[in-house]
Amino acid sequence: MRGRICLVTGATDGIGWMTARALARDGARVVLVGRNQAKGEMRAAALRAETGNDAVGFERADLAAQGDIRALAGRLAAKLPRLDVLVNNVGAWFHRRIEGPDGIEMTWALNHLGQFLLTGLVLDLLGAAEAGRIVNVASRAHLGPQVSFDDPEGRSRYAGWRAYQQSKLANLLFTYRLAERLDGGRVTANCLHPGFVASRFGHNNTGLPRLVAVVTQRLFAISEEKGAVTSHYLAADEAVAGVSGRYFVKCRPVESSPASRDREAQALLWRMSEEMTGFRYPA
Ligand SMILES: NC(=O)c1ccc[n+]([C@@H]2O[C@H](COP(=O)([O-])OP(=O)(O)OC[C@H]3O[C@@H](n4cnc5c(N)ncnc54)[C@H](OP(=O)(O)O)[C@@H]3O)[C@@H](O)[C@H]2O)c1
Image 1 (cartoon, protein in one colour):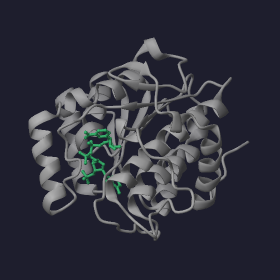
Image 2 (cartoon, rainbow, N blue to C red):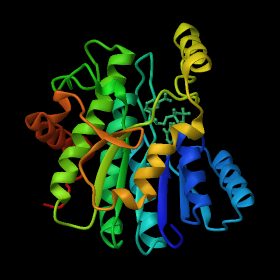
Image 3 (cartoon, rainbow, N blue to C red):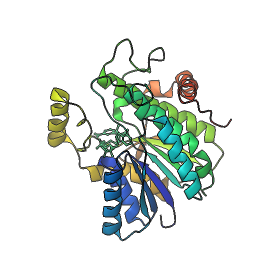
Image 4 (cartoon, rainbow, N blue to C red):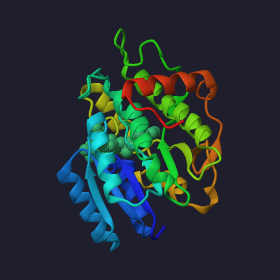
């Protein structure tokens, strides 16, 4: 990975942090993206010190804020000659309905729309790489629901876990459609389930939901380092060079839900996401 340029979103903690660490250990130039400037700088400095890799830096962006994402993409275009790997890792579960800086429900804004917008805005940089890779961190939680196209933000009725499941299904629908659109080019797109990981996932909630997250993680979850293995594999391993449009669990391609393969839903999601971000992907 020496000489490759990699960007990891939500890289100041959890799975993203461990993914960035693995890529830094490989000798790649790594850009950590997160919302907290002080924490991000501290994390980047820690990685430089631990790995001896000086090419580890931090960029601040609230990835639920479309203005921040556009500004981030602008800085990246000015600073980077290309992007070899984009790991869309950021994601969260919000038990109670809250709206982000753009007035969009947080789960939908952060887990799906942010991923859709950032990817589109850095597509030219990925295209400038010899073989650009897009790695979308989805989840096994995608199994079950459909996307509520009439009310994706849960305005009439919100259930936190269902909103999370819907957003993770959107990660798969987006990845499959994106891979199809990129087919024949040099950029690939895959997605994954990292496993049940003892990260800070769910700790943003309060009361019982938070307690359930903390306790089940302590009892049943794998380490953050293990949780980053499939992300790192898709970002760096030669075995998946040229592989695109697949969903991976434990570094193996597996079948995802029938709902994620629904081509009509993929097309509908694409159109809705273009409308909600005001960003049109090149044809
Ligand atoms: N943990 C699991 O069991 C599990 C299972 C399946 C899928 N996943 C997926 O794995 C991904 C990573 O989750 P995780 O478990 O590592 O979660 P985590 O420990 O909560 O880490 C989330 C990371 O995202 C950052 N972040 C949160 N909101 C942000 C925002 N608005 N803008 C920029 N950065 C933001 C956090 O920053 P701070 O450091 O500032 O908090 C942190 O670096 C998510 O997509 C999640 O859906 C996790």
